[in-house]
Structure formats: structure tokens, C-alpha cells
Image 1 (cartoon, rainbow, N blue to C red):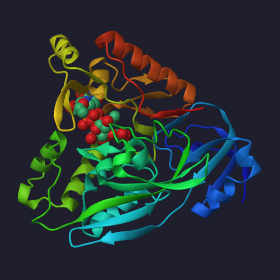
Image 2 (cartoon, rainbow, N blue to C red):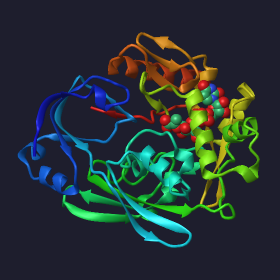
Image 3 (tube, protein in one colour):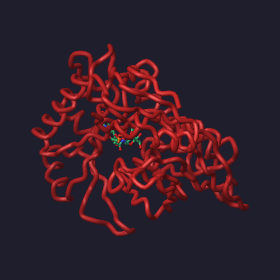
Length: 351
Ligand code: EPU
């Protein structure tokens, strides 16, 4: 196993933040990984796993430990019948390529999650959710290695405790695991069986604009439409440092939402349910609150909020993590002072 030293991580995180890793290595198979964890460098250092880091903010100039880059790739059909397929995907695979290949192969379920950068690893970690589809509902199981015991474990979907941007991997198992594979259960497309998730207002509007009727909607149409929506309001990650949504949408009581609406009637709130029953909580749009606080398009030094979507922090001229942390704290403070609502980062701060 080859360990490199003093590696600059700026090209490995979508924020393009500079940080020097003391040690760095690449694993291309589960066996590689099992070898790494037997080494002294692994055992004597703190560890960071690197997939794509599209949702990570490095908050140090140097990382005094070992960064393990996961390039475990490949996929395998586990079961198949007339209606669906279960496909095991190794965790270092590019998630968007998997989404696109699945659609091309005539599978559906995952098309609303098009154009989200990252590796398969992060799908169960943060239970990726976009445009009315939650990846947790498509996951059959997750294969992972329990780091303290080195045992290889498979967790069924119901054991993953998927919630809004949350899972068992972020909670009880935090830092004690290495995800090696994720199995997805996808449906086979036929015009009769296809049920598109097109309830989201932005999708409906875009489909109407394109003169597409309900009976013309296919997984490909959905994927193209969502890719267009994303492109129109999110920055191009190739030229701009960003991690997408920086904050989570806050959850407040119905009473608090009512009070907020007295302040500004446009403040949206989406009722939440638990196990099919409505609960007295609503999800607000952090982006809207930041926008209403006049912070959309704000520029602070090298960093700012994106002019087309206030929830997204962008780097135009090569920022440092310090500027970003300062900007995010300023946004949190102003939103709290304006609305009494605490917004929490969705991006993981790593030190
Ligand atoms: N809004 C504003 N001003 C803004 C931004 C948004 O008023 O500057 C309002 C919009 O008008 C809209 C509402 O807020 O009514 C919701 O906006 P959007 O549809 O963009 O959704 P979001 O809640 O801001 C979430 C995810 C996104 C995901 C979209 C679509 C979170 C933290 N973010 O954003 O995820 O793409 O829904 O489903 O839940 C990401 O994680 O990187 C990401 C982009």
C-alpha cells in the first residue's frame, strides 16, 4: 500500500478549499481497505474518508492525519424479476453516472436524483433527497465494515433510520464505519406501471413550460427536466467552489410558522408527517428566509451567496475556509435576528 505525504486536498473537495493532508492513500477494493487498516499509519493517526467531498467543508489549513480516498468501483445485479432489479454498487462509484446508466437501462425510481455530484457512499450517509424523492426509499441494504471489530455487516433499509438528511451512519455509527457498497432496488419501466414523482412545484412548472402532458412523462423526460431546473438555479461546480445547499431547511412548530406568516405572509411551510400521520411541525425553506433577510447575492470578501439561490454559498476567487465559516455564521445570526429561526449547516465541517 502506497502512502503519499503532504497532499493538497483542494482538488478533492467541491468547495476547492486548500488543506494539506499529512498522509494520503487510495483504496480500489475492499481488500485494499482491509490492508490499510492493519498499517501503523492507519492505527496511529486520525482518519478521514474521501469520496467526492461535495458536502464537506475542511476547516483547517492542514489535516494532521490520514486521508483515505475511496475508489472502490463496480456494480452487480443481485436479483431481477419482471418488475424490478436490485443492483449492488460499490461505494466509490460516481452516483450521477449510476443514475444516468440506470435510466438508460430502462429502470426508474432514481431519475429525480439526477445531477447531484458525489459518490455512492454519501447516498445512505445523508439520505440524499431532491425533488420529492428520498434515496433511502430506493436502498435495499448497505454493506459496511465496523471499524472497531473489522466485522463486515449488511444493514437492511429499515435498520438505517433514514430521516431528513440523516441516517444511522450520521448518528449512532458516526465515524465507526466504512461503507463499501449500497444496493438499490429500482423498477423496470413500462408506460403502464410508471408513476412519476412530479408533484414538486418546480417540476410541474417546467413540464408545463415544455408543453409536456402527464401521459408523455417518462423517466428520461423527468431526468432531463430536473437537470434543466438544477442547471438554471445552481452554480456550475466546475468553475465555482460550492457544496450546494449550505444549510438544512429548519423544522419548526405549526404555531411558530403561523407567527412567521404574520410577519411575512409569503413564508412557506410544508407540513410534516410521521408514519403516515400529520405531526404539528412544518419544514421551512432556509433559502427563502435568507433571501427575505436580503442576503441573496451577498458578497463578503471572496465568498458569497449565489445570486440565483440564497441557500448556496459560492466561492468566486479562491476562498479560505475561514471566510466561509465567518459568512455562514453571519447568515445564521441575521436569519435568527430577523425570524427567530435557527438554521443549521447541512454541510459537514471537518477539522
Ligand atoms: N427560495 C427563495 N429564495 C431563494 C431560494 C429558494 O425564495 O433564494 C424559495 C423558492 O422560491 C422555493 C423554496 O424556497 O419556493 C424552495 O426552493 P428549492 O426548490 O430550491 O428547494 P430547497 O428547499 O431550497 C432543497 C434541497 C436541495 C434540492 C431541492 C430540490 C435542502 C437543504 N436542499 O432545497 O438540495 O435540490 O430541495 O428538491 O433540503 C443540495 O443538497 O445541495 C441541494 C441543492
